[in-house]
Image 1: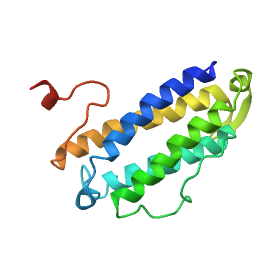
Image 2: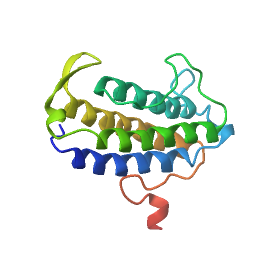
Image 3: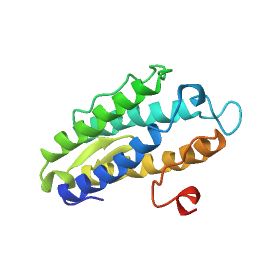
Length: 157
């Protein structure tokens, strides 16, 4: 749980940069890559993170742009990257308006009341969870895996 806005902003900056680096390795022809047929694809996961960023922001009382719940994932990587860059910047602007005290306030979250600071921790945890899935799919698709939480095998060679 965040108790200091500056701590959230520092983590958001690092986490969103890692997410953006993964998105920028996607290619239009590999957006359909999934671990098995019928499972989440690279394109779906990336678009889900754009939408989830907006949803978490909404519950936190922040104005974060994002797609509608049932809006189809774009077929162009550039559209996903552009939308995610808007999410990144909106969090930086909107969260900077919060006070440390506001992080302790309860808001209505996905499952009921939750401290705003805990909800903001969850947006980063949720993003990290899906980044792990995406890095596996990047490797399966033969795409470059960026160093998200440290160097990759290729970076160490």
